[in-house]
Length: 132
Image 1 (spheres, one colour):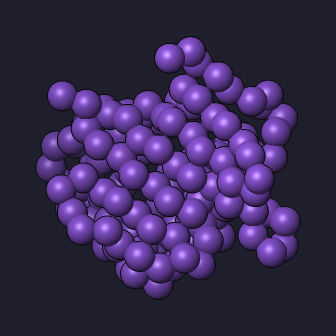
Image 2 (image 1 turned 120 degrees about the vertical axis):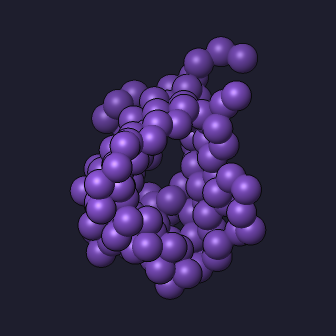
């Protein structure tokens, strides 16, 4: 499959950057501005987490326990009819806030973005899995 990426000045690319920056800020309120009200997380080895409130609670627990730094490199980004999908490769370093060794993970994921009523692209679905 070829690597197809939109220009880096596209609105969806800016949504990708805002989402990644919000994750790396470890700030729940900032993160929640980058997702839709009906966001669904599909994390590895877990049931789906649906809705902004539930995802916000999950993210709050994660940020409380972990200082996280993600790198997400877009492999493919396609936009059509108010939706966009992004296949990304990621590397994450999670450092426990109470001390201990950092854990790393590398894998692949898919974000689906949707234009909200205010005209802003936001993450609607996020699924990721470790590459092993």
